[in-house]
Amino acid sequence: MFESLTTEANQILKTLYGIKDVFVDFEPPKDRTHGDLATSVALRIAKNVGQSPRDIAVRLSDGLSTSTSIEKVEVAGAGYVNIWLKPDALLSELKQTSEACVSQKTRKEDPVIIEFSQPNIAKPLAIHHIIGTVLGQALVNLYRHSGYPVVSWNYIGDWGTQFGKLAVAYEKWGKKKPVSKYSLDELLELYVQFHNEAEKDDTLEDLGRETFLALEKGDEKLRAFWEDVVTVTKSSLADIYKRLHVSFDLDMGESFYEDKMQPVLDEGKKKKVFVEGKEGALIVEFAEEKNMPPYLVLKGDGATLYSTRDIAQMRYRIDTYHPQEILICTDIAQQLHFQQLVETCTMLSWKLPSFENVLFGRMRFVDRSMSTRKGNVLELEHVIDEAVKRAHDIIKERGESIQTDAPEELGEMMGVSSLVYGILSQNRKMDMVFDWDKMLSFEGNSAPYLQYTHARAKSVLRKAGGEQHTCPKQIPSLAPTERGLVSSLLMFSKAIEDARSEHMPHKLANYLYQLCQDFNMFYNTESILQAEGEPRQLRLFLTSLTATVLKSGAELLTLRVPDRM
Ligand code: ARG
Image 1 (tube, protein in one colour):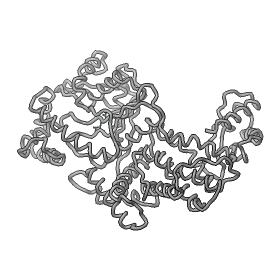
Image 2 (cartoon, helix red, strand yellow):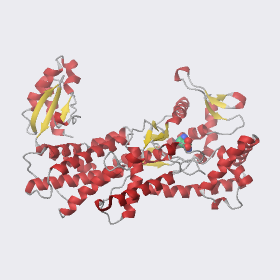
Image 3 (tube, helix red, strand yellow):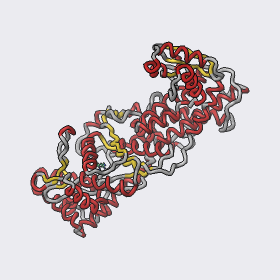
Image 4 (cartoon, helix red, strand yellow):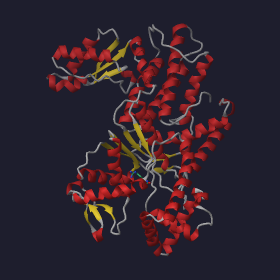
């Protein structure tokens, strides 16, 4: 952004101090009264140059004051340079905002593997699954938008002792119908029943384990049972993913690595990374300074574990995809597991691509009745239905003030987006607060506010009789709310880049919220449709660019925005 100005500033510093390769970092200041752009370069180079930052800033601003694109320049604080641009210079930068609304062509380079959602089979998705699911999809969208080839991966939990338990429960208490006719809720019931019975009867746990071992050894009946369970679960998951605008390139889960663990176990033993632990188990012991407990990779009875599959999974992904980066989204509880995993791979002398366990916090409910629900889990599907129902209620309540020719669709869009935005607008590293009122509010940092603002912009454009508006050539001055809106619009590509590179979609959400506020301020202050000539053209241009940015930004976050509302 602002390339010519950056070049100019670089040149000035070069001439003044003879330093090559300085990089002047122009950024919009947090406080808008400090101008359109600011730089702290004087503070950065002061030591090198041997002058006070303030002196450098003054000389830089003197140099810049003759620039054709600058209206006013000021030195502030210890050595900041604040710049106000001429309207034309500012508006011409909006070209890159329009460009940022369109996805870049996919580059020919190694892919980024993004793994997310990863539910365990035979259980319905629970409310907390939504966090990793929409976080991961947002990252996929952001990476793809920026031209990265992405492999999105749902590593489902379709292997492990829980299948032994489920098979036992089915055998003992199952209704006399084939598994394929079971609903997920019924399967969950069986699983819960197993745990209840196991509290009274401690032979059950062992039986479950043995049954899983038999499944691992290839017992045909168990295998068929397992396949049916996987099919039932996947088809029920598909419906929810569709409503959330989530999809995957691959869904090979833990079972896929069944035959890929032995070579890895052999390698680990040979390299003496996997050593014998208690009762014939295999473990990895880490150097003391790593401060991590041993990592169990094979049980004494020869059964493999979650960890064993993850080691095999790493090997497989590296060999098959040569990824430049692997991201695995999980909640914070898995942090140690992934630290141990990465360290184990390093000890095996594997060359790892850049790796991040994209962590997220737990969910906290403002509504007590949600957190204190005993027994069965809060199912995601029920929560989505509830959100949509609440959205419908609001639409009815608001009556005439909501214009729509498709209330059904609008309710679904509003309900689902409220839930998703409620999550993606929060810093993933913190606990997520689940608050119905906040999520569905029309005023605050919420999906309805964003959707409403988009629809408002669209409505202006409809009334103006066209959607496409170009920037006028000559603009002598900008009103404060116009300038505010332009500054906001200019930040779009940075918001995308920050959200993507830091794996923090809330940065994009918060950006969109700011843009909505700036647009509404502008909308409430300036007349758009009553204006004439260039001001009208400018305002319509800003309105249509705002609508495009809101839609494109919302879709990156898996949301949908209506044209009417
Ligand atoms: N299915 C696991 C769970 O629900 C999460 C899987 C995370 N990914 C991985 N590669 N281990 O706890």
